[in-house]
Image (cartoon, rainbow, N blue to C red; front, side, top):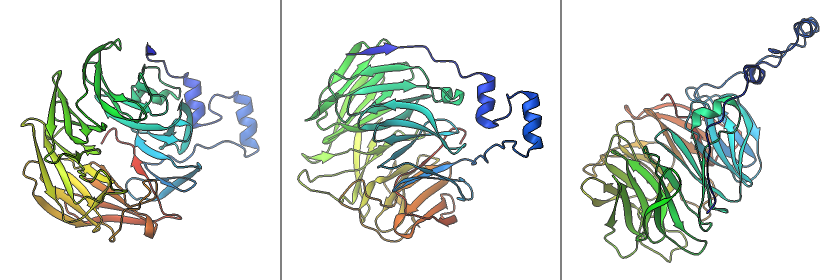
Length: 398
């Protein structure tokens, strides 16, 4: 195992920061006057407030989080995935060559990159952001506040024994949970101390995939036969009611001990379109299944401001579920009816939630909608030049 722990790097100089904002700010005074006389003074780019980022075939749209006005477009070929970086300005973009950091507020791709094939999960927890590169098994942990300096943050790194499609999360106490597996199979999770020394492991989680954090720092790891929960230094396996009961994608909330997850039972399906979701109570160690009467996709799960479980169904409605009872409290009209495509990289309606607002894309209509979760009413909608795929945004300060 290749392990390294380094101290956080300092940001750039004041002049460098100013340069990123106004090109002439640190120039020679005489030169500035000459430029002004010629009408050549540089002007700062208009920042985008509380930006959202939507991916399309060939690039990224950056939108104002309140008005949904299109603030900028960035050309970026290939299939690009999007995740909040964890601060008020940045989004992490998974590209063909690795993770890249987008300054969404400033509408520009930065020079901050984490190179490696098959960049995968991006996890935010306890003030740290963790990147897992599937093609190398490398884990990178950094403080998202350090992105503000414009330079690549220095932080913790760890390399899995074998490359695999995995995920990792750093706890408040500095321990790191990271998945175990190889390209053929995945079996469980190990726990590392602050010096990357293994202190525990559990290999009773076949097909391990995905994670989420619940109230009290209960971490759920999805398995093909239920879910593995880590809390207070102990692992607990909560079995699915079916021999094959796969929970792969989850959404957690600090306001609830219950994790929202998908639930699939057909191991042979080319694409299973489930209608049931899982609710895992990490305190009572119980798993409840709720049939929504409609299917959904892996981009359909989110949590509301009070811990509500939110699922965007193929019936076009946003299902709001009480995580404690499993009762569907309301169904909000969001988009038209849709069907999940066979290819997971193909566009489909996507849900992103921030504060009391649910943002829902509608690729077939080239539309994006903002919905108030309290009233269930659409705040605004916008038509974009192209239909979008991934949808994300900044999160800190909300």
